[in-house]
Every structure is written in structure tokens, then in C-alpha cells.
Length: 259
Image (cartoon, rainbow, N blue to C red; front, side):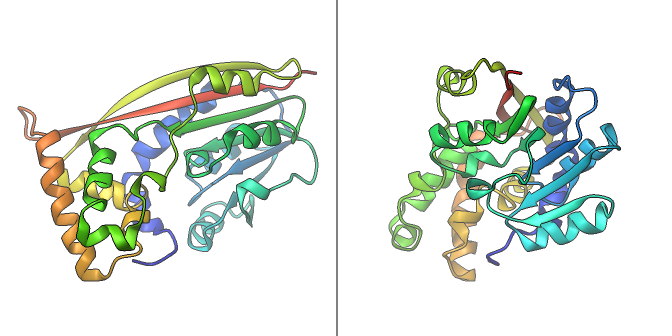
């Protein structure tokens, strides 16, 4: 597997991936933000929503994937894009909106990250975050189960360390409500209608499966996916109309910095 993200694979389910980004956007009450940063912008699907809602704002997309940024630049030439790591990023000027759709779950040490991001906001600025909260779903438990098998474990290592559990809702609330900030927090479980279990695998090969497959040879990847598919068929049976339902819980956080 290539070390970089695969934009074409990621965009196979772009409508489904953009839906929570749009829901997050609808809960932001800013009227005329001037400086907006999209953290983990990917191929620009979330950045496009921001640029469409606030066309007069300076919108900057950040990502650590050159392939994703190349797609984003082609899609939105009117926006600026930068290759950067979220954990070490510092805004050049206070931001009116920092928007992070499905990116911060890949980072650890949220106890330090959240205050760091809040500190980049202007007074009255908003930090808006959406993160998948699906590590205990069958789709992700099965990844760890297969990765723990003897034929894979030496190369993959500790499967539980690939992505850390999110903090508790109360933990995020406490982190986000310092210095007179306010927070709006909610969870939504999406039920995505998929044509087959293989479609679920295609979805996850672009994101959650990447750290498990990357250390493996092509032959080992094929073996891993075969065993993973067998696990998924036990947890995602066909519905009456022949489709499969993929439950996908997501956590939403919108914090407004005090004025």
C-alpha cells in the first residue's frame, strides 16, 4: 500500500463523508468570519462547504497528505492550502473559525491539543470538530482482531495503539469551557446503506484500515482483507432488500471562545 492517502478511494463515498461536515457547519452561528482554517481538509470536500457559506473569508485548508492537497487545489483554486501537521500548527493570526471534520481522531494527547487549538481563536471565535466515535463498532473491533493474529501481529504491532479512544463527553466539555468559553456537544449515529460488505471494506481501506495494511506485503494484505471480510459478514448481514447497514457514530463539538 502507498504511504500517502488515496484521494480517489476516499472520494468513492464523498457524499456520505460530507454529510457530517455539513451538519457540523449548520451549528456554527458566526455571521462574517474573516479567517477560517480547515484542519485535515483532505481533497477539499469540507473546505468547499466553508468557502461556499462564507465566500468573502480567507479560507485555508491544512493537510499532511500531498496527494490530498493536490486534489484540493484543483477543486478550489480560490482557497489556500498548506502542507502541515495539525499537532504543531500555529495560526499566523487569530482565527475566527477552526474547523476539523474527521481529522483529530488520528491525533493523541487531546488534553493538550484542545486548549492549543482554542488559543488560536480570536475572541468570539469558534472551534468546530467532528470525530468518528466508532472504535467499538464491529467494523473496527474486527480490524484489531485480525491484526492480532500471529501472521500479522509482528508487522502491525499493537493493534490497540493505531487510534486512541476518544475522551469522555465530560472530558471534552471541561477542556473546551475554560476561559469563559461555551460548548455545544452532541452525538449522531449514521446508518449508511451499503450495497455489500465489500463496499464497507472499500470505505475503510481509505481511512481506518490504512494503518493495518500499510506494513504488509501485497500478499499479506490480500490475506488480511479476506479474513476481515469473513469477520464482517458475521456482523453485517444482508437486509431484506439485499443491502447492508453500516452504523457509524460520530461526536460533534462546537466551542466558542469568550470575548
